Image (cartoon, rainbow over all chains, first blue to last red; front, side, top):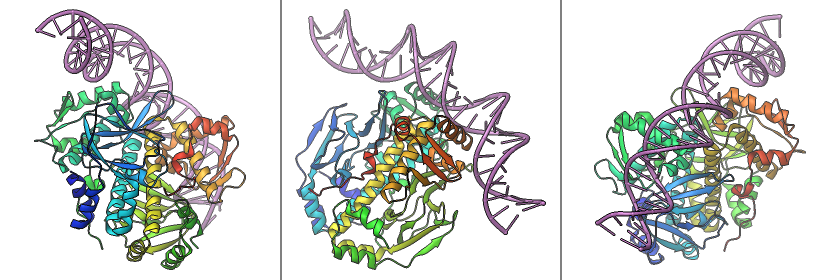
Length: 240
Length: 240
DNA sequence: CGAGGTCTTGAAGACGATCAACAAACGTGG
DNA sequence: CCACGTTTGTTGATCGTCTTCAAGACCTCG
């Protein structure tokens, strides 16, 4: 069930069969969420952490004045709120962007496993650190790049992350974000997202129609985004 | 020596005397850095992690075209690059913003302690998660707030974090950032930083002169920044 | 006292926000 | 299966924020 998660964990150092089995064993039955549903509520204090099995979710912060910001996107195999394992309260909500399947790991069980298997604990820790690396990267994207580079960057990142879990088909993948949602990710208005997409289309770099993206010129997209996937930490680590 | 760090760690759950002693014991002798010095080089693979004892540092990413972004500021007591413990390569450099004192913890020793003391491991993990929480918050600040709110937010955050380690004196603290540096934190040009500071001065909210900031109207500053310190996680956690 | 860094100011222009209106796609119920 | 309402996407016009460039003033430190 959680193969995709185990694959990500193995990037830090393959967990033993025993560790994999132990982690799999504490997972609760699959639950489903419809597009738009709130999976985790801001300010709540969950007693379990959620693994996304399929679909896409966003971490959403509501601001006064009705504006909102999506601080992260989660794809299949991500441990969506592993940080809640150690943090008292959620500082954001998590919403399903399309139909999603999840399973959860009770915090008490996680704690037991972390005490028992220090290397598994570090592999989980590692996941949260990769998350932080992605956050830092988006700080530079939002701080220093214009709208078209931001949009291109989003597509590059999602292409790479989705490809990693086998969800890219010939340069084509599902992007369940409306243009308004994309604006909340990129920190620009929905109208401007539209104009930027048109620009990308005009340059024959991508097509982006009805929640499906097709990359037509990867190199050009990478150039616009100044994309360097290092920060995604998709290469194998070696415990020194 | 690392009292400030231990205090931060204790927020997750007071480490035992044994854990504190063990952590203190692996720390290397104090090293000093001058303002402007590069403490950790981007793309390097450090074999030890750095604790900032005094001074302030910034995590800096260089971009093509000569622009740069500071993705985080570190204050006394911070474990500056604890994430490097688990990450193969630094995706950014760390520079001293004023005269700094540091000590370091060799990764091999850290690993040994984490195997030995699972609760200490979780407290360290917790530190990296608070870092990520701060990153997420800055994503919303950069994505959704204008320049004056960003500047006010920076001052609010630094006031709160510095106050936490006893470095605020009557609303006054040292901010060793030039206006150009501040621009690299806030994602705006140096010129605009200047204009925003003048606006804050004109509104009688702060004085900010020669690396010293004096908060004159905290409530007004908080209002401009829409500052809510929850994300800094400065309240005591309780392990459930 | 001179030199380099930092701060300040002005003017011009780019980028993106906002508002408003309409078109296209979607989904829901009759 | 169509009708209708709602959501999403598209376009144009106007306006404000912030960038860029350039120049001068002010510190600070050797």
